[in-house]
Length: 354
Image (cartoon, rainbow, N blue to C red; front, side, top):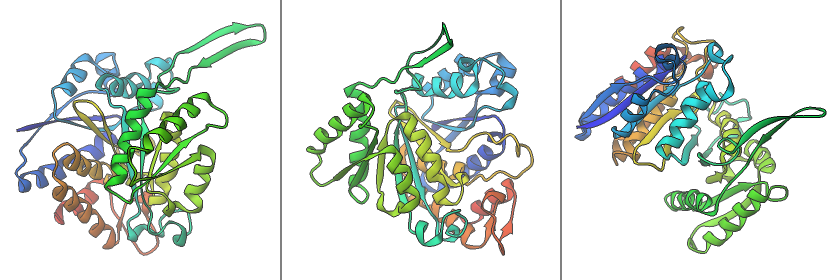
């Protein structure tokens, strides 16, 4: 019996996570996997109930689980809190650090049925199939932060720090992933300006010698942002540091039609975390409007990565593709002639095809 800790969190997390759990309950037994689900508190919901965005019992439950399924955290209700106490920092970042989840894997695959859903031209995005590997526990987000008074007012400081071992481990992961795909790694940095990026680029160049069958290219982050919308099909595996990855993955989500289609896995520690790439979307929370497909596809990544059930994962992806081909859409991917459905109906449609 494998244990999955379910953390719905805030906003639409409360609606999309149950749909993914239902999918797992239907698929796992078919492949000989028995799953036990336990629910925990995180984010603003945890603040309301316990006073802490990441209660110690939640962190302990994470460590005792085989996998974690997370919805989303944060919302306007908690925006008044100091930055270090807000759910996005004190829950999500703390969870990643506490579990040693140094790598975020975000596949960006455009299903053919959604080629017209992107804001970009169909001929540009059709055939997009890339993965962004984002370093998750270093850089600006985890560096020293401070403010101090100066004669002109205030000075704010955020430290961007990376060490060679931190860079090496994320790059090796990207090279190994590329070996299972099309064999190309694009390492994204800002080496013309930042010293941390120069170390990043030097390390990538050195490690490439260990992977002679992989093509390595370097690209500045601003150029990468442009190339993602100019010619996304040139990319296979993109690897980059924390903040650059945060920005580029949201941009890449539009290649798939909507950020509501983008799953992710955070790995590196003893237990992996699976979550959709989007936020808590408080404006549509509780209205049965949210797209659950990113969360359902994150559950597929769980089956593949944590439980080594690639066939089970592919069955979920195939079911999602069939639902989209049949013309069903949530509001974020709606288009003329399609049939709009709610969160729960979309989940049910996927399950019907499993």
